[in-house]
Image (cartoon, one colour):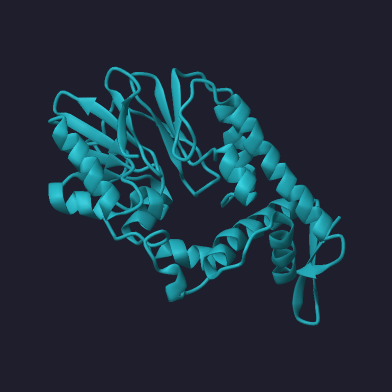
Length: 291
C-alpha cells in the first residue's frame, strides 16, 4: 500500500485506498487528489520529496472527503495551489456541506468524522492561469455534482469515482450516486473512451475498462428494479430504505443511513422523472409507488 507506480513517461499513481495521480513536470509535480486524511497527504509528500519533485499543486476530481482529506496538510506545509471545479470547489472550501447534503439538514456528530468531513482548504478554479494547461479536464458528473477526470499528455486517464470495483459492488450493492441519469451518461462516455491506461480511484488500473463499466451500469439497473419491486405498494421512504437494506444484506448505521439513504432518494427521483414512479400524500406521509 502507498506504492508509487509509473503509468507513463511523466505520469504515475500512488496505489492506496483512494488512488492518487502524479504528473511530473521539469519544475515539480502535480497531485491528482490528496487522499482520505492528513496521513495520506503526508505519505504522498514523502514520495514526492524522495524523488526530488516539489509539489506544485493539487487537482481535485471532486470534493468527497476521501479525495480531499490531505489538502489542508499539504497546502499548509507547502503553500501549494489547489484547483477544483464548480460546486466541488465550494464543498472543498466549506466541507461541512458534504455531511449536510447527505443527511439533508444539520449533520450530527456521527457524520462529522474524517471520512465525511475533511478540513477546509483554499481553492482556485480550473480557469485560473496557474492550472497546468497540458492536463485535459474530462467532465464526469453523476457520482458527485461536478466531478471530473483528468487526461495527462501520456494518455493516462484518471477516472475518479465513476466506476467501483466488482468486489465493492458485490459487497455493498449500492454505490453512492447524486444524479443517476447523469451517472449513466458518464458511463456511456467512459465506455466509448480510448486511452493508454485508465486509473479509477477505487478499482484496478486497466487499459480496457469496458467490462467494469458494464458491471457498474448493470448494478444501477438492478437497484432500480429492486426499488420498483419494493414500491409495488405505496410506501414511505423509511420503509423503502429498510427493505432495500434487508435485500442487500446491509447493516444500518447513522453513516450508512446517510450515504445509502441519499443515494436511494436520488434513485427515486430519477425513477419518478422517467415516469416509472409516482408519489402521493396520505395521512401526512409522502408515499412512493411504482407505475
